[in-house]
Image (cartoon, one colour):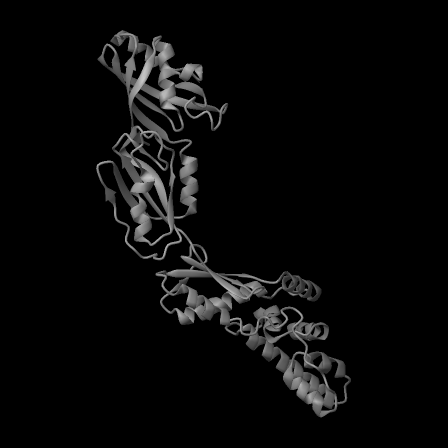
Length: 411
């Protein structure tokens, strides 16, 4: 009865449509739509007020307030000589009537899309939201459902009826149906597909994403088949760190996520890729959290590199034994000269955990470096004119040139 009293107070203050009145008192019955609940509440209020009126009680003001938003009450008052005009709902301005029509508009835009899951979002007039907040605050209502939630729920329910083979997914939907009740427009947003995997790069003239210099192709171009598989408009890659275009990526590969934008299909199979330059091994579909994890993990990954180095001065095995001093070293690097146009004085500190070596000839040796992710390995070898310290060239007191660089493993 307390809620009924509150409902009476609500109609005394505001003309409310069935949906808005029922939504304010959403816990008065489960499995009942707000419209049905609002109609039931108004019927109860009407019957009680008419009974009191016939008993001679002065409830005319309550009847007039209810009649503004209730046809049976207007008919009753007309029968006793009191004419009351219908008023639009104070909260929604009768915008909630027939809101399911937007589902039909959405279905038209969804034709031709091969998807599994969807969610519904909405944009409502600011005035409506302000009035809803005003009514809730003035009546101290704590049991209601928000108008935005009802709009999304009712449209989603109608979409489920029309698209019986689809499901609602509020966390990771394939598509989002955005309904703008201000303009009356519906827009379907196709969420990107994110595919996790690992790649190996076997060639030495392959960049990750952009062609430059003597780069023959890019990893991005190689993975365009995923864009075509899902009918996407574009694709990008998110990678855990990067290797130079002339460096090979070996071992178990480097983690990455391929993002296919604006896909037309969400149910296609992801096939692996292999040619003489690149191997891509898909793991499965993933989400933005994995992209963020990749970016963060790249800063702390431990990587094992192989470097083939040319020395200007002849070296002996005893000379290379000096390199043991670099195991456990903390290396300070300023942005290499080859890329300093991007961040000319950015400072980077990384750890070199272990260093091993093998003399190939008096002027050539192999260097194995196990280090923290983000170390500029070439600069660690040749010193970059003093921009990296300590470095291998300084320790060996000779000019060094990197002939080959391979990433052997990412731990």
